[in-house]
Picture (tube, rainbow, N blue to C red):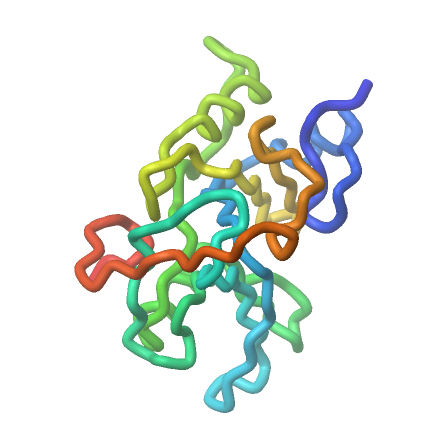
Length: 191
C-alpha cells in the first residue's frame, strides 16, 4: 500500500510502513513553503547548516506577508530546519526558535506539535486537513505540510493536489512575492 506522502527528499511516494514510522511518537507539522530551497552557512555558527526557502520569486503559491528579518543575510528566506554537523542531527523546534531569536530570521509556521491520535480521524486525514489551510504568508491555500519526527530524525511531506504539477516556475512569467514589515503571524520568531 502506498500513501500520498513522500519523504522530505525526493518526489517518490512513501510506503505505508514508512508513513507509520514517521508518525509514531511526537511529530511537528509545519507549513510547506513554496520557494527555492537553500542551505545557508554563517560565520558565527560554523557547525550549523541553516536550511530555508528563498521566497522572493513566486513558484506556485503567492506570498504577500513574508517577514522582513532583522539580519539582512536572511532577506527573503524562511528557515525550516537547522542541521548540527558534529552531532549529525537536525535541531529540535525549540532549538531552532532559539537561533531564530538570536539571529532574527523567520521560521516556517508551526501548525501542530504532539502525537497524532486516531480516535476521531485517521492520521492521513488529520494531516490532509491541516494542509487545506490558508498560508500564514499569503491569502492562498498553502502548498502543503511537512511532517517531522525529530526523535527519529525522519521527515515527510504532503503536497495538496493543486500543486502537484510539473511546470517549473522558471517556465512561467516571473512574479515577485511581497514582504510584510509588520507581520503578526507565528513565523516572526515571537517578537
